[in-house]
Length: 102
Picture 1 (cartoon, helix red, strand yellow):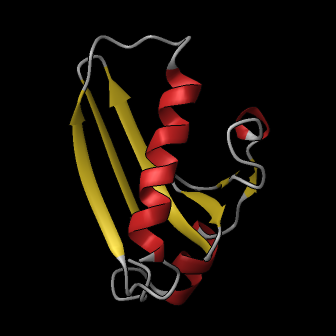
Picture 2 (tube, rainbow, N blue to C red):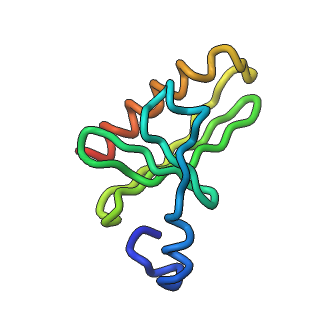
Picture 3 (spheres, rainbow, N blue to C red):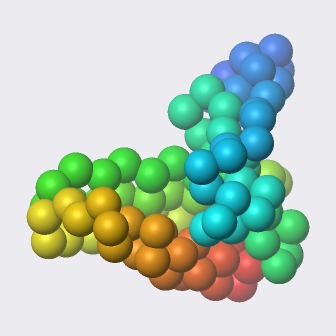
């Protein structure tokens, strides 16, 4: 996706238009959301990501802007607990940071 092989340039530009995700700033300042993907800043610049959660499972994927590093993983989880969601997301972001920064 990040190399522009799936979408035309105009579509890719539209996908990357984001706004600050106000509700996620306590988890990581600078997280922005667009058309189904998030921009997540980190120590090596940042990456594009998408999270998907439902009771019993969580999926995460991330790709660096140049497309050279990407990761997708699936987690079997306990039933969704909204009170624990921020702490879980912070741990997931730390893992994605390590995987995308190398």
